[in-house]
Length: 100
Image 1 (cartoon, rainbow, N blue to C red):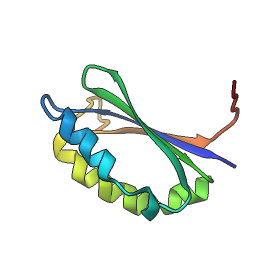
Image 2 (image 1 turned 90 degrees about the vertical axis):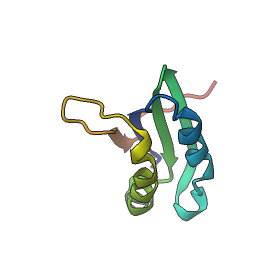
Image 3 (image 1 turned 45 degrees about the vertical axis):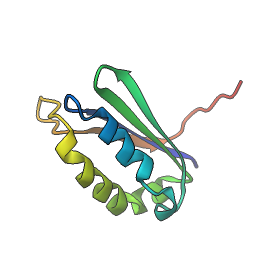
Image 4 (image 1 turned 90 degrees about the horizontal axis):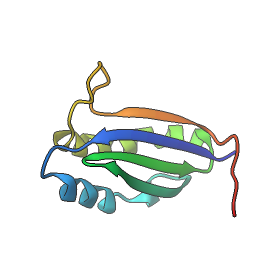
């Protein structure tokens, strides 16, 4: 079953280009089961990172690599406040998918 992860991040002022460059350089080949990846600018310096996976297990198995990638990004990210740290992650199995 297809799984998705969605992570909210806010980039420090002047660091957006570097943030996107690091994401562009990340290798999906090292994360078995990854299908697609999106970096969505939701306004200003806020981004939603979306990953599509073959399964929840594939996503879980890629966590060490995702954490390594996040460690490269941490210096570029602002704390989101409210005890959330620099990311607000969500993940789960796709319950509905519609295609036009």
